[in-house]
Amino acid sequence: MSIIRYKTSDLLPTSFSSLVDGFFNDSLTRSGGSAFLPKVDIIENETSYELHVAAPGLSKEDFNIELNDNFITVSGERKFQNEKNEKNYHSIETQYGSFSRSFSLPENVDSSKINAKYNNGILELTIPKDEKKAIKTTIKVN
Image 1 (spheres, helix red, strand yellow):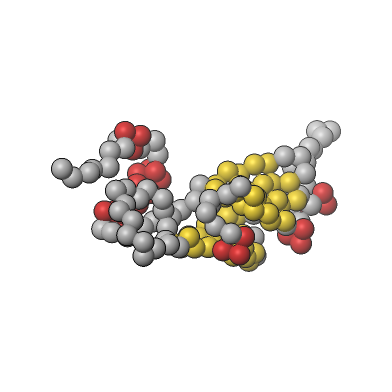
Image 2 (tube, one colour):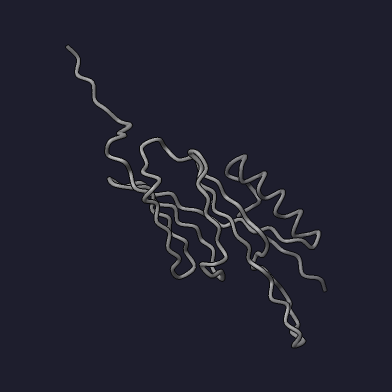
């Protein structure tokens, strides 16, 4: 008997992006490779933007965060620990490999005060807004 992955949630993709992502992730996994693309939550509040990158199993040294013009890029690698103690894996669903995610930043951020912390498998980037560069203004009609 062979084991076949069955995913009911991917039968009908909700967007074109998820269709393309599913195609590449499934084809890499079937061919023996691995695709690792952490999920990211983007949050805005009154004073800042936040990026929450779900990347469990990494240490803070495994991340590389670069700021280039108005783009912030988070990259890293999760390595598979192949131990020599004769483990018989029946299924490996954890994703391994290198990843890179880039995000365009709005013009009203203070890039000199970006803060990053890694806690319980979530990399949290806090990107403060610059009060002097307000994007939204109200124009009074005369």
